[in-house]
Length: 252
Image (tube, rainbow, N blue to C red; front, side, top):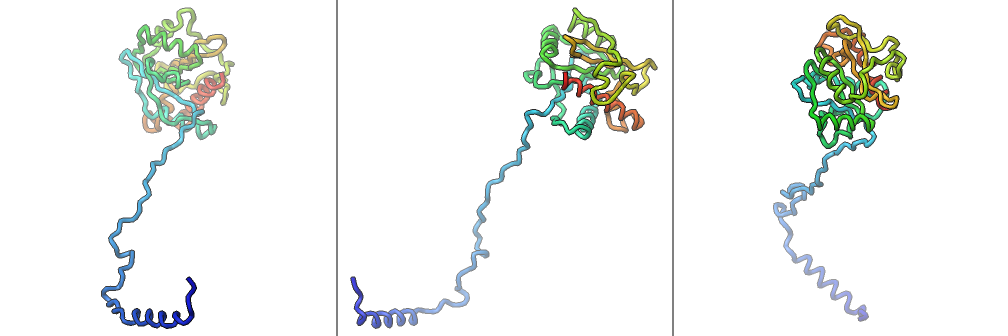
């Protein structure tokens, strides 16, 4: 349709008259600004921040054994050791202490097991076989005699590996030189029976699969300073030896 210019002017005049005749909106009827309306804001759903787990992070498990011994002894020991290792090396570590029983499904997900206490350590026949398989498959067990475990540990190791003897580890072994040098073997942290600190172990095809410290008690040296009031230099020795043991287990 083509508009005739003779119609345009009358139409415009009519529209202006309609607008002029429309009632004005009173001041109290003005549109309400959007901010004053009770309209709920649009909320973006919150998502929890999930920390990514490094699949390469090294896991250290505390061995929960039976027999009546206090396997849980020293709950600040492993966290302090792991923090020390992280600060000294920057290695990827799972900083959460894992408490592991031999029959647990994820036993083999923990390449390093730590056992300590003052009393009896015992394993059932099936636990003994599974722990043996774990060690033969590449796992590592470190036993720290806090005081009073020696007889029980030696009996347990004899059951685990009847074909082998628990042997004293010579001072030139890599476990004493894997990160720091300990030319005289494990450090003496607590006196106990005032005997020299010694390290013992079981080797399979040249690899140390089990390491046991006697009259040394480096585990107590890992604990918070106020627990045993050990001097700083003793605690540092204990932490350094702990790093050596972990470093050896990772390398061999």
